[in-house]
Amino acid sequence: MTLTDMAWLDGAWALRDAGGLRMEDGTDAGDAPMPPVVEGVGRVWLPLERLIVRPFRLPLSHPRFVDEAVLAGELEDQTGESPEDWHLAWRAAAVAGEDGGVVGLMAAMPRAWREALDACQPLSAVRVDAVDRLAWRLEEADAVDGVVAVLDADAEGICVGAARDGAWLGVTRVNREGLADEEVCRWVTGALLAMGWTEDMPAVGALDATAAAWFADWRGETLEALPARAQATLRGRPLPAMGIEFRRGDWAARGDREWLRPWRRAAWLAAGLCALWVGGMALEHHRLEREAAVARARILAAFARALPGEPAVEPLAQLRRAAGVSIGEAGNEGSGDAASWLRQAAALARVYERTPWTLEELDWRDGMMRMSGEAADLAALNRIREALARALGREVRLLDTRLGRGKVGFRLEWPA
Picture 1 (cartoon, rainbow, N blue to C red):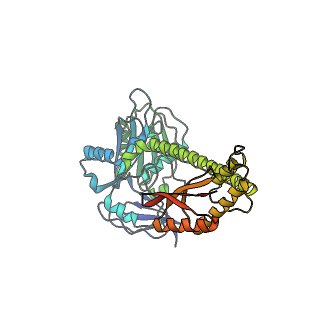
Picture 2 (picture 1 turned 30 degrees about the vertical axis):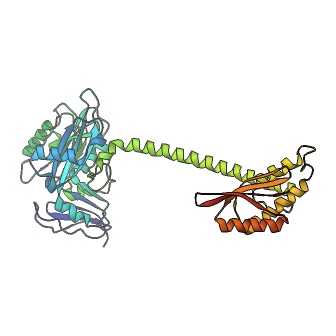
Picture 3 (picture 1 turned 135 degrees about the horizontal axis):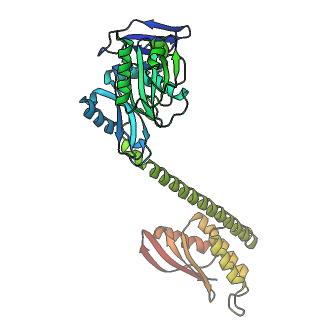
């Protein structure tokens, strides 16, 4: 059988499945360990009186600054309990006006319960029965300004709470347990007065006729018959927004990284600016790469038109030399013999393919061709000089050499 919801009420499991509500025998209430959760249960409601539930008010500017460390101190101050023994959850809201601050409601379950519930999969929600029931009643009621009492009765007792502007001032439960109706009502009104509600303020929710008569401004539903506690809790309504969620959501217990929360917005802003900067740099790099590719294509096209059939070793240098020869000074010894210069450039290119070197300068002046560059070593330089002499059909003289940076610099000369 696949179950959908379950609550631990007065030492027994109340289970709801497709066939309706049924009760299972449980363990005694109090400090007994939580019974194993049946596989397939989606939600669990814990009884309010088995938990520590306390209101709080803190001088903070926003509810996001409420964390487990702060509320652990409040728990210890209010109850004397060690926070290490309890798992906390809370609901908080900001208070408008001069007083300001944050008010809310915190609840604590024993750590042993938390460990047992963590082992239950899949489990989507762990809630407090009285808090959810009161939140449902408040959502169903018409909007009320100021403090309002919220009540929800069942055959075993009455869930009692006071709220103001969407924030709980306090929540408790008064169980009948053999008390007369008048005694139950006195306990209920006493609890509300302690929460800040006064008798001239409105009350909403669902009560039997006897309890409703205690309120001068009763605006809720009057019940003819009181349901069982389990039926009042598991009535199939969606989870209320004002409930306390122990496992997830905005009010789940916080981790050790909560000190990062105030800086989260600044970190996201910085990350966004970095992403914009990186994106801009990537676009600029892409634009420059595209322009460089266009420029390389134009240079190679110009080289192919100017020097057809010649290999492009240093296209720009070769084109500059070719342009210089073609517009050489009239009357100069080498002027007008551009074809001879191009033949020598072609010979240089053929030798370069077989024995490469680093070309620094190639100069044609006074009928002599001079070349400077760097070779890997002296043996490579000798191979370059001999290969040039064979390709040019001229004597190639070594003018000088220099050593540095792990290479051999040289200057060669031959008749043009």
